[in-house]
Image (cartoon, rainbow, N blue to C red; front, top):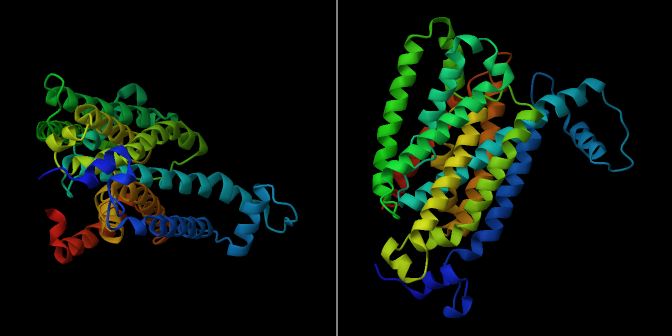
Length: 367
């Protein structure tokens, strides 16, 4: 495939190179992103109102306005409402949205990097490494019973996720180049090894098996402002880098050699993409456990609605991922109340059939 003027414009940002917008679907960009932002806001408000104690929508809006410092709002609600909303539901909603955005953006970045619509955030072993790290923390004799409450499990999961990503990168790197096929194969091998070790530890865990299984299926039950603020810097930094690489991802779609001819530093771009997407995924997994299908399906939804321009797809996948995971978590905590389902079960039940539908109706996504 030959490089074109459109590709050059995507790298340089020079709109004078072509008479029309760089991509034919570019006019859909802002309406799509605005619609996704409005959907996210609506889902978040619904999630804040729903639960074992329902908060009337009008009261919810008044509470948020009063907390935002808007004058003229009368405090005419039970004091328990404020505790439920601001100490329990709001940090949980924000954390679920942050994790969904991280997984959605990382999934879109990996799909662009590998030029494979089946790529997801866990592709190079990040999930398996996080699961192994969390399992080790839960089973270490000195930490049993206290590791979850003290935050050692998220730290161990983050360390395991980053260790596997760095190991896959180190194995795949050849000199100053990073062959994506080698990175993919290294990630698959490392993921299999880490998953096998996790399974072995689970078989030997005895009474801790239920706790490990619950973490591996994903949950926001332990959400807090401290956990949210602790992971926010990692996700914000990695998400910003991913968004800044949207133009570079557009150019990579024509092939690495053509991208080099257009002046793109391909190896540096691949390094930044792998590092930022892996960091976002590791941070997300460390606070939520393993949650599938968000990073796999959401980029496809945005691609169907807005085309293949990564300047639309990356922020769109982040917004869609946040809305989807907030909705999934709301269903998980309310559908069988007072029992709470693992959020990974909900995302699998909804994401898997939808993804199969996409494959059936739009087989061209695979090519």
